[in-house]
Length: 505
Image (cartoon, rainbow, N blue to C red; front, side, top):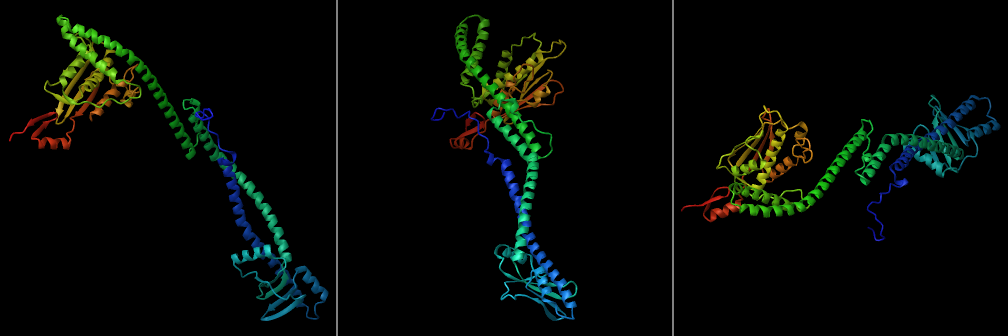
């Protein structure tokens, strides 16, 4: 909330200003680059026009020189000389043939020559420099222009003012500039339209989709619809659509988990009151002298205490991680016995339970978490086999264990229908790895998390043609080097996890 009292959190982000839009920048850059290209063409074209114009005047002078040299009977009349000068615009014309020079036409010989131009002996840089010098600073200068006379080997030379040349160059430069501007605008427009259609529009489409998706990620219409194109932009659109769809799926799962967390919190609040009452009743039952009650009362008390401990751990939604295991030496056969009793399988039940656990097998683990792991796996197996009503089908859950060095291997097998393909793909994912209709997949997810917290592994083995086989590997807790050093220093020899004996001297 801002100081003025307006809510700025949900204010939509403004779009880019027109001058800052990518399409506008592209248009101006295209015009600029085409103009630069036209300028690069314009500069040498002006220089070439100057040389060409001077060559044409030399060619005209050469034609006139042939006429003059052919008249040997008398000198050329003054009127003819004036006509030649007016046609060429020259003040002096001289011809050099066979190492002889002849001044053909003279009219107002200039006092000084400002610039010498050879129409065949020049460099491009010199031609450009001289052209722009005439264009910007000319008009009152005198040029001395020389060049060859055809293929005869002679040379012709003329002296002329540059005012006519500069006027022609200005006219040419103006026409070329106007034409270049038109070509730049047309080319820039065509390039802009092409790039805008191929690149800018898809980018604007992706930008609009991202802004819309950011405003409301739960809107299915906010997911971009990729076009059927095989270039990089098509790939980007498809990847963006995939990420948006995946994010929407994740958000739906998070919302479902949030709703579930709220429901669990409400249930936990009332369940703790119910369990408190059940504990009082179980305490009174434990005082009853009936043998049957005396047999089952301790088990009932343990079950209620375990349920009360579970509800105490559910403090609030968002605490997705389990508590760190409190590891102790546990007799595995007792844990599996509790699991068998709480499964509620009677002797005549269609599902049988078989346990092959050595009585002296001890495991280094948290007893409550170990119970939850085995209970979840065995209960899933029982529920999977209860759906089969064929009396001829063998329905059995088998639990076995063996110790290999410092690792205990627990195998839980059943003769049920096995896990479907979807459950195998999302084996330990909540709400995705359910093995039966209506299941949540939380049992396997919880079991996997608890086993991982012990530093062990839980995996589905594919070594059974029928049924399901889960294998749990739980290593003993590692002994720290500092603790081992203290034991050695105090004269205590470690003989195993949780065991120590005084060394004899």
